[in-house]
Image 1 (cartoon, rainbow over the protein chains, first blue to last red):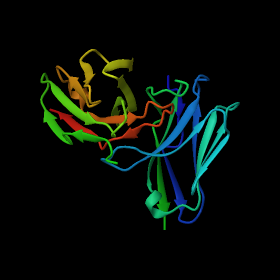
Image 2: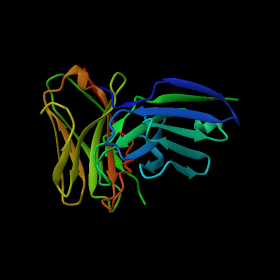
Image 3: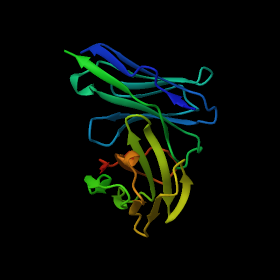
Image 4: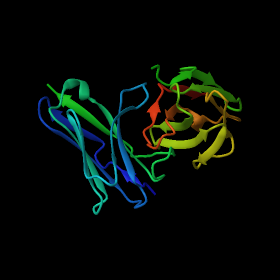
Length: 114
Length: 113
């Protein structure tokens, strides 16, 4: 059973526009959520995270929104740039702040079109 | 600060052999986690070590094992390799001070023939 779902395998967005990547989860024990960006043959790079006590976290062009009642989070990238083309993974943890295994979605391939 | 390093970057083995992968965490990080990435299953958690002890384990067979040394470096071992073990193996480290943010190394690409 997939506890973290990214239902869009790919997303194409024009350069300069907003990219919105979505993620749903089923485990209500998850209390910390992260987004990672990954290029082929490289490890995931941490982008931004959010604790379940917040509903929004912003870092530069990246904003993550968390809707706990809907068990849904989204990553907004504004404005989208060509270098943002990569696979984006949503991840979640239920360890209450300590280091633990992350549960990942299967990723969304974001393609930024010029 | 240097990032997470993994060696080797690429490895080719045959079925039945065993393999050992190495990971050096970010300086000061004491928690090391291992993940397997395959096209079909995505990123899956293998296990996590902290202060030389395995704290958490994912749903993988006993052929997958690991250890952590006193300097926080970690090794992962896979015995009796199967074709399905071909994957990108990723190591991540995190600080013990309260967050779950894990920082990943570049991975080891294992091919089993």
